[in-house]
Image 1 (cartoon, one colour):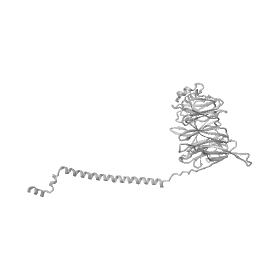
Image 2 (cartoon, one colour; image 1 turned 120 degrees about the vertical axis):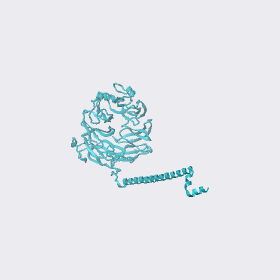
Image 3 (tube, one colour; image 1 turned 60 degrees about the vertical axis):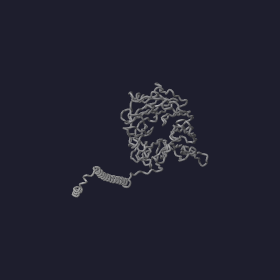
Image 4 (cartoon, one colour; image 1 turned 30 degrees about the vertical axis):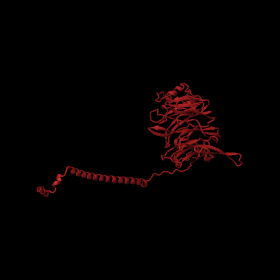
Amino acid sequence: MMDKELEAEIHPLKHDDKVPQSNLKNQTEKDGSFKKASRHSRFAQCRTMFFFFSLFTCLFVVFIISFIIPCPDRPVSQKTWKINYDKAVTYDFLVFKDINKDRVQDVLFLHKDDNSNNDFNISCIDEGFSSPCTFLAAVSGTNGSLIWDRPVAQDIAFIECVDSQEMDELLWCCFIVGKPGSLTAVDFYTGETLWNQSYTFGGNASVLYPFLNIPDVNDDEIQDLLFFTKSGRQIQIYLISGGTGDQVGSTHSLNLEGEVGYIMHVTKIGAYYVIFHSASSLYGYSLKELYEEITGKKSIFEEDPYLKKIINNVTHRMSPFHSSGAIRYLTNVPAKDILLVKSDACEMLDEQTLTTKWTFNTSDVVRKPVFGYYKPDALAVVLENGTDDQRKIWIVDVASGALLWSLSLSLVPRSLKTATMQTADRRSVFFFWGSSNLTGPNQMETVNFQQILYLFHPTLPDNLLEIANTTENIAAFNVLIFEESHHASYVLLTGPTNQDQPGQQRQ
């Protein structure tokens, strides 16, 4: 015993070596936990520093962008604007497109004068025309300032602006048929002439519209153009390269009598057909057949098996259809069906079988129908029935042919077309033109007609809002939203349309 006590006094720490192994293990775990806690603490500090660094960096960037880097100057959109052209003649032509890329729709129109309003120092003589000549002008939708103004033809027989597919990008251009015979393509954004070709259509030939944009047929990766002229019973077909204006193949003729109209119809399998109306019949021509007749080459286009059965191989008359009255208009419906307007009724035809879905009785529809939404997302068609001075406006449901709304209006001769514009509630606003007589001092003689623009919204079916009136000659009219999420606007193009009586043109 004494030896053990003595040893303990000599070696006081020696007994630690005999501490149980479990105690040593616990001590080691405590030390490891302490080291881990230290590492976690350092990581937490790093995360906090990184968070605040990111926060201050974002705030700094926002400050720089908001207060130091100046925003690009952008013209303020005016509520109303007007531009004047003196001693000019105007045309029934208005097109809207964002030309200067400011996210506001701009206005494209035609005028004929002697260069007095041209600020770009480009005269009629510079482009090879005598003065006066026809100019194509673009003005800003924000304030009416001139974007560009260029002479494009001596006189205009027909103009249509379309979008063409070029290298996966949309190329907007206007095709102009000039007098004497010429075909010109003008770039929508700059007014520059893309190409100009001379064509002799014949002295009595009239150019039919619309022009038809078709898939590329000459391997230049630009959509091509198909259009028609009519002289007597002969319909001439022209296939034009969209890239150069050169004629593809030769001119081909069709034999159709009477007033002729047509549409491009694309079936569910992607087959292209040009459907003509003449007298009381429909005639169908596949794009495959037309291409092979014009070029003498095998076509890559397809034919629809059903339409191929119902189209007569010789006359091309579509056999299951025959109208009791003369056909006046043939229109593609946005829902893909076809609306047929006859002298005694309107019919909706199925897009695939061309069988009648419904019939709405009419007596005298005076202009091509327009479409809008009377109910949310439910398409309707607007029909104008009657005479030049008294008309009945009908809004008819496209799906069922049911009458949704009607209105009687007094109109001036050659009144303007009805316009529609879809709103945020998925309905459309409808715009109609009416008129009233202005009398002289003796209250007996009519001095002039006052044209009145009415606005109608389906949520208030018993109310019309008068939003404008004028006694000037209106050459063209349309409504649009110039800037997204902003108020709607209407555009009037007024002035003389008689080539021999130029005057003041306003917009």
